[in-house]
Length: 320
Image 1 (tube, rainbow, N blue to C red):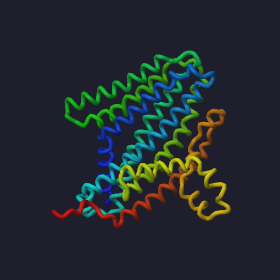
Image 2 (cartoon, one colour):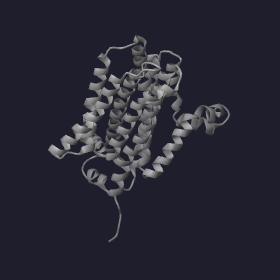
Image 3 (cartoon, rainbow, N blue to C red):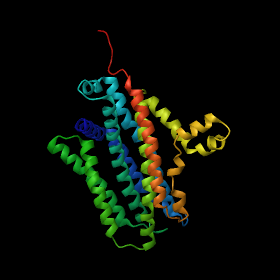
């Protein structure tokens, strides 16, 4: 059973990487994060805050969109076309199939977050001064993106492999290499390096938020198609951003508000950009509490997904 789950999770991860939309989202996020330092000329002494806020927001929002698309591709489309029926016709239990699918989706989201996090750290290094950018680091950054795409194209030409998958895997090698190169370049200010390392706990919290959205989208994809899933997840995302105001203040007087306040994730708990702007270090204990929060929500929505998928009709039932 463990071997079957591992193979399903691996195949799901590979299928998501083969999707052109996944490569498009990754490239769009990386390019946006890379050009944010260019906008620092239009702010006064707030260049680092601009880059950090924009990079973290890009990682969270693009990660949310990626979560919905990945879940709909891995679950909803296979249920609609009957592909899942081919797997479940073998001795594979439905909970094992679904949990393996969720792990594959979370693996793809983890790769997306890893690339965007390294890009964010490099963007902070590029925007080192109000009126002067580190053009060497900027050239290394975009050179790594171009090299990753070129390596994917070369692999596609020589081995006839999927270009999106080859390009994403190549970016998984070139972007960390670029980060190491930027890390050893001479720095103008040591406090900038310390600030970049302070971003790591904040970026981990963003990963928690993306993973929670991934489990929500996967649970909903057992019953909803892409557009419906996108609308529901958009609502959950919007309500979660203002859950303290819309639900939290009524939790003591209304049982419905209390239940919704417990069910809807509070995304503000994962947004630590304000603490970084105030130069307050994020305690690792808070990151640990965020991991527990993630485990509770992930466990709840995985259980919900298993319940929704238990009696789900799979494949098309057409009479010819």
